[in-house]
Length: 109
Image (tube, rainbow, N blue to C red; front, side, top):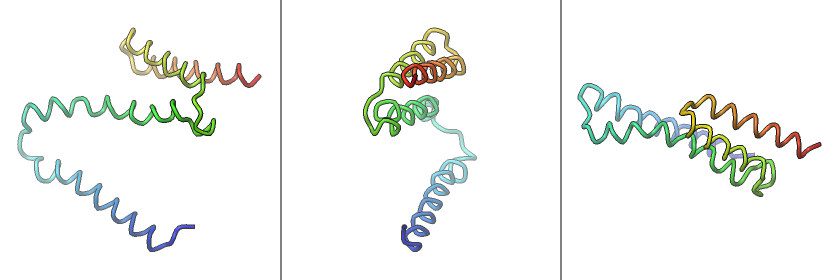
């Protein structure tokens, strides 16, 4: 079990850091227009977050003890191809999830 003092120190530190990041954009810069170069880069933030969160789960899944898995790799490939072909996020996610579930079911049987 983690020491309560360490736990609360980490929680308060993360809360203050989160507040500082939000305040930097909303409190300090919120009433002024942002430069065009910054807005151009901020446009790609949301697009980069999902792959950054999903990639480690595909390459080193905890469900297999960190070993690469054909079902997860195939589902990621299907998601990428469908997303590039149809330019629809929901279709890509649903097709990847369906591929993952079907391949996991086929390998379990």
